[in-house]
Image (cartoon, rainbow, N blue to C red; front, side, top):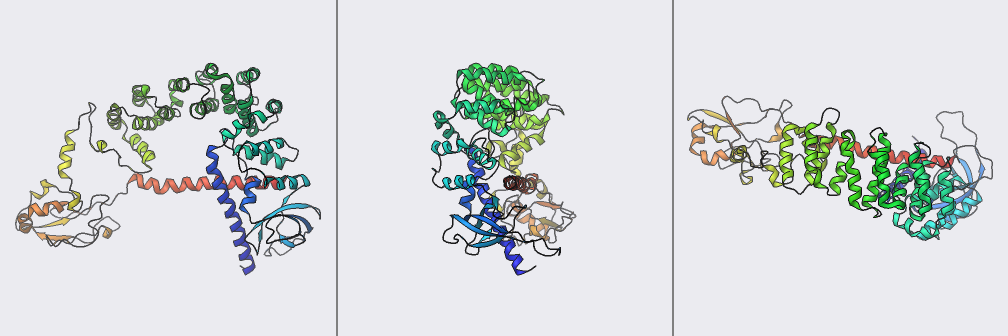
Length: 548
C-alpha cells in the first residue's frame, strides 16, 4: 500500500468518524424532538458544524478511468468559487482534487466539505444549484434553536429542490416539541391540510404535518381526522400514530372512545394499528395534558383482555403507577401458555416496581412456577446482575410471606466476610478422624478477593489460587494437613474449610454466571447493531442527496 494511499485512507476515515460523532450527538438530542418524526439525514447545519472547510466549487475536469485495475481511482479537478467556511485555509480560485460520484458537465457547481487543514481531506462533492447555495448561506445567521429558526425551515416543505425539502423536514424532526408549540401562530394551516390530503405525501412528512396540525388545528379539522381514522384505508391512515395523537389533541377526552372502539377493543385489528394507537396514547400520557391521565390509563388497560398483546402495555401501567391490576397480572402469569408466556417477564418487572409489600410475596410465589422468567426480568432490570438489590430478597419467602426455615440453616453455613469469604461446613468438620490426612480446599465465595494471594500462617495452610484451575476444572495445587492438627484447632480452622473429603475428588468445573455471560454477548451485540443502523442511515441519506 503506497504512502499516498495510506494518507488518503486515514483522511477519509477521519472524515467519516467526524460524521459518526455528529450523528451520535444528534441521536441523543432527538430524544426530546418531534415525538412521531424520524430524522433521515444529518442536517446541513450539522454538516457545516462538523467540517473545517466548506466551499462552493466548480468542476474543471474529470480524468479518464485507468485500465489498470490496481490503480487508484482518478480524482476530478475542482476550483473554489466561494468559501462558506474556512477562509483561513482556502480561497477562491484555489484548485483541488477529490473523488466524484457520477458524470457531470464541466462547470457544474458543487458543495464540497473538508477536514484537517491545511492538508484538507475533501469529502465527495454534492451538486448545488444557486438556490441551494443561497440556502446554505442563510444557515449561519439563524438562531440556534426556537420557533424563529423553525419559521425559516417551514418555507421549504415540499420544495421543488428536494434536497432543501429533506433538510427542512430533518430540522423539524430534531426540534423539541415545545418549539413546535411556540410556532403555532406562524404555521400555515391551509398548506398543512393540503399536504395531509395529498396521497403522494411521504409517511414521514405526514407524521410531521399531523403533529403540526395537532398544534395549530381546531374544531373544523376534527371531522377530517375522524374520517381518516374510520376509513380503514392504509394510504389514508399512513402515519396512524401521529394521526390519532393529533385527533386527541383537538378532540380531547371525548375522542378516546373512538380510539378504543376502533383499535383496542376490536381484536381483529392488525397488531401494527393497535401499536400505533398505544403510541399515541403514550404520548398523551407522558408529553401533553389534553386528556386526563386516568382516562389514558383506562384505555391502555383494556389491552389486558388481549393476552397476546398485553406484554407491551404492562410497563406503561407500571410507569403510570396503576397498581390496581396487580392481582390480575399475577393470575395472567399463572395462566400463561406457550403462546403468551412472554408476558411473564413484564409481569415480574411490574411487580418489582410496585411498592405494595404483597408484590414481593407474589414474586416469590411466581419464581417457583417459572424461575427462568424471574431471572430474565432481573437481568434486564440489573443489566446482567443475577443478584437482587433488595436485602429482603435474599430470604426465601413462602407464599404467606414468612421466611423459609431453609434461610436460617443456610445462614449458619455462610462464612463471614472477615474470615476471607470462605464457606464453613460444620457437618464435614465433625467427621475428622485423628491420624488421617484430609485435603482442604479453600474456595472463595463469589465476589471475594481475599484468597487470591498470600498464605495462611495461622494454620500453616497455603491457600489454593483459584486461577490455577485447569481445563477440566481441577485444582493444580492442594494443601494437606494432619487430621489431628485440624481437630485440635477445629474452631479456628473450620472457618476456612470449604470441603473435607476422603479421598479427594476433583473440583467441579467452574460455571460462569449466566447474567455475566449474557452481558458479554448481548451488550456488544446491541451496541454494534445500533451503530450499524446509524451508519447505514447516514450513508443512505448522504447518497440519496448526492443523486438528486
